[in-house]
Amino acid sequence: MVGKTALIIVDIQNDFCEGGSLAVPDSQKVIDQINQIRQNHHFDVVVATKDYHPANHISFAVNHPGEKPFTNLTLPNGKVQELWPNHCVQGTSGSDFHKDLVIQPTDQIIFKGKDANIDSYSGFGSQGEDTGLLQYLKGQEVSTVYCVGLAYDFCVGSTAVDSAKNGFKTYIVEDATGSISGESVKNMKKRFEEYGDNIVLINSNQL
Ligand code: VGL
Ligand code: ZN
Image 1 (cartoon, helix red, strand yellow):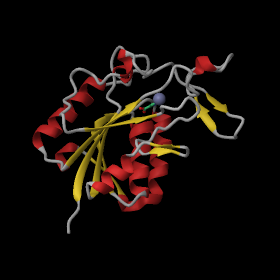
Image 2 (cartoon, helix red, strand yellow):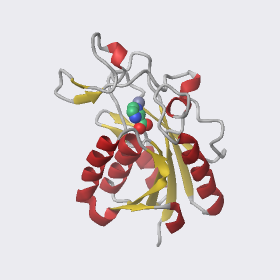
Image 3 (cartoon, helix red, strand yellow):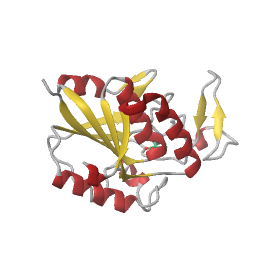
């Protein structure tokens, strides 16, 4: 039996879009591209993720006195945490989907980064946070995953890595993504290497 396809739309939330606290360049183009993709192609399953942090979240620089956003901090447990401006705080408009993003009632919404002490870039979660995405995709008999959204170098890339790790044939539709920095794009692409053909970078005209 051939498995089903899933489109995973990562973090198209106000804070990552133009005017937001952690705005990613070209977000409006990304939104338009995602809507176009949905209009022109069928996916058996559509998932939209939300970064969804409490105000005291570990990734917010303000919660670490003396530390600045866009720097790295080594936590007491040895993990390196990137620090960010406050973003996607639970219950604020910054955490809402951008008004131009097409969302259907049947789309599965997945929340991540909900625990104050755990950051999850991946829609699948991270050590200590299970978002339910893996179980959902398995339940829907998905075998192929297409990743789009913001930001390529953090949440989209991490979601793709976990998708491949979990055995899904994984595509990133690059022209439907936006990135925070060239340096972190380079680092993310290095992480893709060990997955060979299980992570494929394409553009929407190859769908
Ligand atoms: C993201 C930084 C912090 C993302 C989320 O969605 O790529 N980036 N939290
Ligand atoms: Zn975040």
